[in-house]
Length: 148
Length: 148
DNA sequence: CTAAACAGTACCAATTCAGTCCTATTTATA
DNA sequence: TATAAATAGGACTGAATTGGTACTGTTTAG
Ligand code: FES
Ligand code: FES
Image (cartoon, rainbow over all chains, first blue to last red):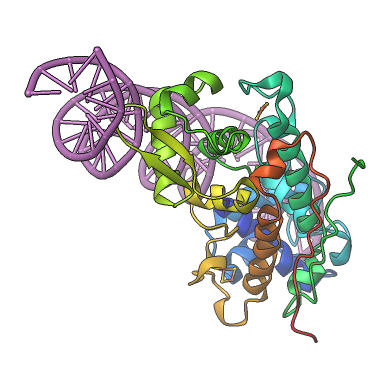
């Protein structure tokens, strides 16, 4: 159904929670408890987000995680990419298309453009936005195109 | 990676092929052969597209499938929905969120808006567009928002 | 020195997805 | 009217992905 993975959904919840108190630091256990997500899963996600440089961590007693950047400087697209890799709607949209028509395949190039539009839509929304009651607007000026 | 299913990719290939000769009628075997997609798979997809009323079919010898509407009147969004159901990025974006915060969950409402932006992006592109060498533009005026 | 907390990896279970097969039913035409 | 070309519909399997778990190691405040 063209939906993001459940884990990605969790990840945004985590990030949005962190975005509400950008100064504070949270342990995995705290977040798991507060959001009612199983601890091992939370731990796994935080690790991935850390590797994507969206978080900073402090080890040891009293350690924890916090955002690596200001809430308005982290986009939903980054969170999604961190968990499920780059946004590319079709296989061939990201490189070698194994499609049949190949040579004269118009579909492929067009999927790439559509993918970009989607990516732009996700990039347009920051964690700060997500933490707010309602997005003001997601105005997506999607694609600038090489003229006919 | 936020990608559409392989079957959906196939489905668009099929639809685009049909869109190139909207008058003609194609048998499943013809399409399978031309696009190098396994026949049983093609047959399955055509059935689903038929049930979504995107195609019309004629049975018997010399029968086949053709588009139910003009190529410019069928959007990529419709094809995607026909194969993988309605576009809704998150579980809760389409109804009952089983999310923890529930009550005051701002994330949920915002995901809905993002989903809509994506949907609009897919609706903005028709089969006729996909059949052309390169989309002119996918300008997505995504969301009109209830003002602050 | 101990306990809290992150780091990394490997593993299992369950669901989903792609693909196949089989058995009707319809219809042009030889 | 018999035959073959086609769609209609469903059931079934195998593979791949995903969600979730477990274990072992490292860091660090008190
Ligand atoms: S190369 Fe993938 S659709 Fe043609
Ligand atoms: S209800 Fe699903 S994210 Fe809160």
